[in-house]
Length: 336
Image (cartoon, rainbow, N blue to C red; front, side, top):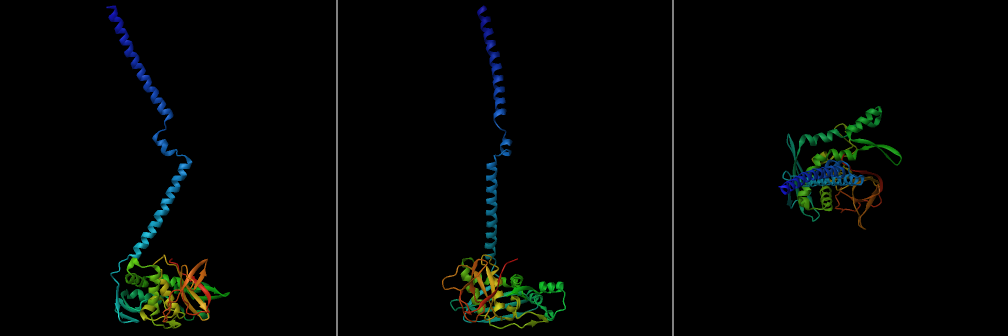
């Protein structure tokens, strides 16, 4: 009996002792975990400075990449615009500019010879209201240069009429705002850009091929100098692209502005127009790396290869029509 009681006491002691040890061991583990292991939220908030800077750098890099990708996607989308509303075909005819007019639209048929001397026909339509409005906005009052206007009136006439003040050879002049004209006329030059892309195979063409095709298109438009005034406004012997396309003729500055306005639809091509003396003339130029045989100008530390869209001579990219001319002004075209 004594032996049984002794064993029972021993077993009870072991049970009580094990329960006490288990409880204290669990408390020990819990206390150690709380003391030495940081909470999950603390790991997300208390980042080391170096890691925070790295994270910001990665985010900044990703943002820059997304911006560039978005810009490229937008340009690709522009270059892949719907071309169903314009028509291109080859023909045996050459140098044709036909315009049919209705109450609501113009129907254009322009035929030119491409680089291979093939006849290429461009057909497109345009909103008559827009084509008629743009020329009406251009120009200054015929008595503008007689004086009698306040400076605020002069500024307003120039702004509305697409003219601006410029300094050449130390003298102030009022000249057409070539950049503004090219930008304002982008709606009427967009069909020509689409036609060129369709003719060249849309996205398959290179910028050089686009420029060459556009030059031949412009060169085959008959040369004719616009009047100094039209519809009661001084226009300085310049027709805006909308007017040039409806009359089917143009001179050096008129064709150069049309050329530049078309190229503004492809932002990767940087274009400028160049005014020169000896003789008084204007041509276009595109930014690029000229070959040893190509004429170019340097502007703001960059090289621009000469492009003569005036015609009727079929001059290639990089060949000047006048050898001894001197640069008077360069106007870089920027889409505002």
